[in-house]
Image: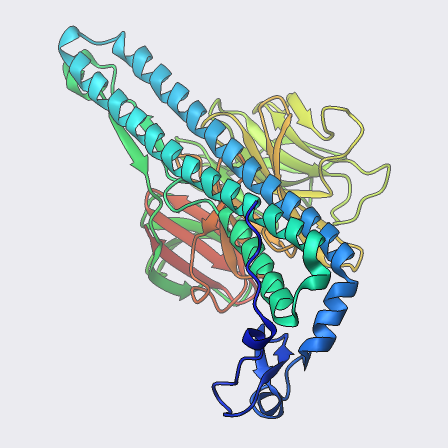
Length: 495
């Protein structure tokens, strides 16, 4: 084993580069650097500093505890990196298997002359897989190298801590801290690995056999660019339902009227709903569905603006609604519209037929004991049948926070996303055709982008995109609509 490099006492007594004839005998914890006596009276006077002797003495007393702390932190961080690598590896393998399966399924429907195209796309898929594996392998190699160095330094700390000079000990301390920071940075998913390759299927029409081949593409979510912003009243825009990239129905709090606006802010039509509404869902034939929490009814509006009640949810209060691919309704229901719950509370998501017949309810985890929701609000169904539900609650200090639950079609919890910094205030959710989910974080004025497995990908917009709190979000094609809280502002972004 190589011995750790030591400095002689003479080498440790370096002279200050800023003050001639002054020895470096102090250490600034704020700047993490050795300084001289004059330095601490000047530029470092308001910093956390002390003599090298005292800091080194304290470190020596804490060597045993520091050793345990370093081991604990390094173990935790390294395990986190390993989990990221395992997760991304599994994801890449599943991605490869899914794409290969869809390629084979489509290949059986077409004639022999298109086989070459499938082979080329499969090669592209495997190249993408190889690319990801190479990056993950490099990340794993770096992790092993850092782990080896950390273990080496810990061993030297155990063996020779009392023999180190002050400068040696501080240098060792700084190197360990730097290594731990580098290990933490390894946990960040490398740029490009969150891009998802997917097979875009073609038509099964025999008159367009060439289109059946489809294409293998890497989905890269580009930055959203602000296209326009405008105001609709002075209250919260609590729901946006796009009809196209140019038009959307919007609804504000403290009003019972729906407004159809274009992305320039011109109001083209209004429909009176005669009740407060949290959100809407629309079928392919233009029928709009919404919850009436005042009467506990599910209602619809046809193209002419005629309102019809479909069924009652009493005694449960309906809050938010979404449509499934099969034409059923997903409804969030509460027995009491609060963020707090007790042992007798009922807060759930119900899958209903248009007749009101209950198909399935999601209230507890698979064990049947732990409730999933405190106040379930916005929800959606992904292309694969999985469901995303925004859930709100109050913490011990009375602050409203939230999380996003991912459930499969049977109600099994796939993930629970709780934000990135412990202060997550989600209110609305939407998704694109590739399964990326966008969640508004109202208090922090951010849009979180997560993947199908609930893993954070990135923040969609820059910190400067919103000066006001955000509330609602909707996407149509390459156009993103975002509604503000309390001020009536709507911003339209283009991908």
